[in-house]
Length: 192
Figure 1: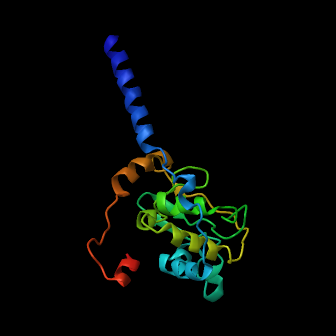
Figure 2: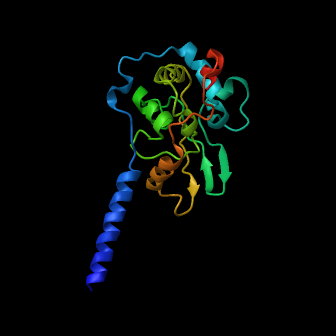
Figure 3: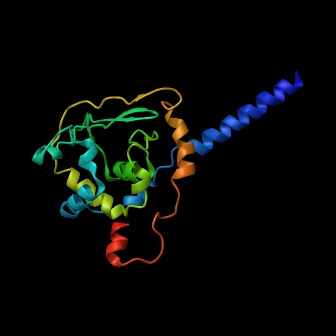
């Protein structure tokens, strides 16, 4: 009986440690204080980051690429990820998101609700974005049309449907190193 209590206690301690390690780590509220976005610069960030390639409606061409209603499906070994609506609709999209909300999503993989986002949003690639670039992108996104198409839930089975486990993934893969390190030209540095 004593061994069972010890095993239970160790299990609870281990689960608590895993929960603590896996919790979302958003930016401090002061991280974006004083930043003002430039929509013209934000358009460059938008196209460089490939936002429309995932979030536009399937087969959209021309100006329709700027309607970010989502819905594209991305099958994977873990299930199917469905791009959400990131239009300026305040209910169905991200029209109600602040600069801090967008910064947390892009650089920390944390949604407005404080939950982990799936790395189908390539925040591991965006994690080192300058927050000024995020402010510029936020300003540009605010110039785009709203669309009230509801986002669809991802189609993921257990255990991939448990967002808390993403904190452990982040510990492993959301590192501090650059993929391309060393001294670079100013143009290459900007691209990095």
